[in-house]
Image 1 (cartoon, helix red, strand yellow):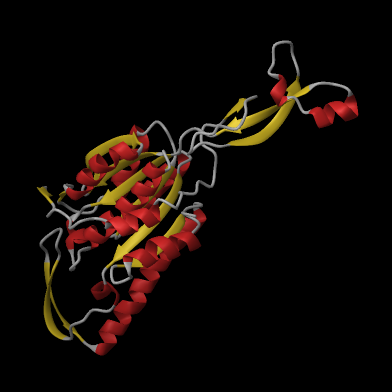
Image 2 (cartoon, helix red, strand yellow):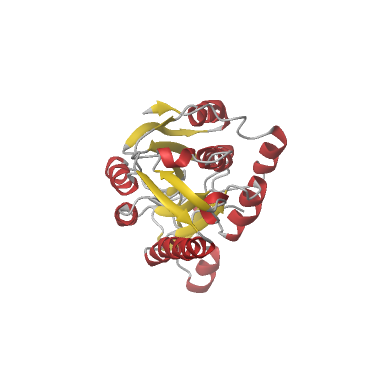
Length: 297
C-alpha cells in the first residue's frame, strides 16, 4: 500500500460557489421519530406530517389542528417525522486499477467525492469517507459544517492506494462497522466479480446506495492495434495478445454486457447507477447528470 500522488486542486473557487446552491437528495427518511414540534429553521433538517394524537393537558397549542377542531369539536395534536441530519458516506476505491489514465480514474473519482461532500457539508449534513482497495484502508468519520471542508479535502488529497480490488468484502466490512445508515455513494471501476455481495450487505442494512462506475476512455475503446503485452496492474500477470478490429469490437460488446450487468444488479436491489467516463467534463457530471439521477437539486 502506498500514498497516491496528491491530487491537483480538487475544485476551483468558482465551481465551489455553484455547488453551494445545491443540496443532496435523500429518497428516504433515516431514523425519523414522531414529534409534535414546529418545523425546524435549521438548514439540513426537515419535518413531514405523519399522524394525529389526542390532545392532553400541557401539549403545545401551536400544534393543535384547529380545522379538525372546527369540524369535530375535539382537540388533536399534529405529529411530524423529523429527519435526523443526513449521513452521507463516500466510499472511494483506491485499488491499483483506479490509477490508470491521465487524469487517473482515482483523480476523477475523488473530485466527484469532493464535490458531493462539499454540497453535503454546505447543507450541514454529516459527511464521511471510507477508502478501500484490497480492504478498508482508511476512514474519515462523519463530520459536519463548512468548518470541516479543509479537513475533508485534505483527507481526499492524501488517500493511500494499493492492492487488488476487493469491493465486495470492503462493502460488507463497511456495512458491519457503520451503525448509522444514510446515503452511500460508491465510486469504483467495479473490477471485482464479487462486488454484488457488498451491495446486498448495504441494502440489507437499509442504506440508500448510489453506484458511480468510473472508467477511462481507453477502457471503452482500446486505442492500440497489433501485438501487445498486457500487464495486470493489480496482480502483475502478463498476457501477450494480437488486437484486431474484430477483437476490439468483441471487447466493446463484452464491456457493454459487463456494465449492463452492474446496472441491472443495481436496479434489482433498488440502487442508483451511473457510468462516468473520465473525459466527461466534470462540471457536466455534477451539475447535469447528477440532477438527472436525482442525486442533487
